[in-house]
Amino acid sequence: GAELLRAAEQDFITDVDALLKLVGDRTKPIFIAVPNNPTGTLLPIDDVIRLHEKLPPHVVLVLDLAYGEYIERGDLARLMRYGGERPNIVITRTFSKAYGLAALRVGWALAPDWMTPGLNLLRGVGNINAIAQAAAAAAVQDQVFIDRVIAETAAERAFMAKHFTRLGLDFVPGFGNFLLARFPEEEAKTAAKFIDFAMREAGIWLRPVGEPGFANWSRIGLGNRAENELLIRLFEEFLK
Image 1 (cartoon, rainbow, N blue to C red):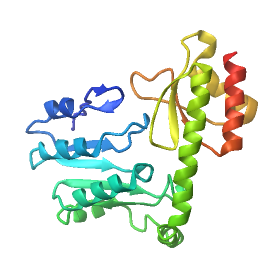
Image 2: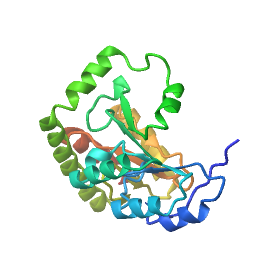
Image 3: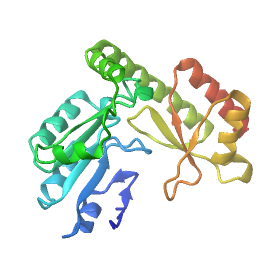
């Protein structure tokens, strides 16, 4: 079977040199999320390219751009062009985040021609229904909607970051539609306790972070202003 190797990060950002040290003759794919999940941090595009240029040709670099709409449009376009011209890069995209079509489970991949037959063998027959396909096709035409979502997300991310700072919560500045926050080590103020508190008090469902080293963190999804104000009030009540 395959052995999963994890490279250390620097300030929650992918460490290219640490990744390269793990690459060997048996290495097959390398996965990177741009921006990262659950931290929201962004590996600069120049570093993504540097990583790829130093990989041996038998290694496939898989770039997960689920949150790609939230980075600078020029950077996204550059990354898509670069990936589309290389024989060992796969880029995965989704309509579940900025496009708001999570319930339809629609995604797509940009992959080299030699790989697509194998990818088609992995997916089920009729895995995307006609309604989901039509919705996705319409969504990509609505750039006005996406521009509004991106702008509102940036504003709400700044709003939540301001209040997290005021409340003394550690958090990771990110580029997605969420913020990763660390809770106090006090027994009564942990992330797990707040997740339970938010559900009981307001029916808000938050997720713990299951990754190693993030036991007392929670990834806080961004809502609209009214929803975020409610969440801040819950934080104030919980942390007092």
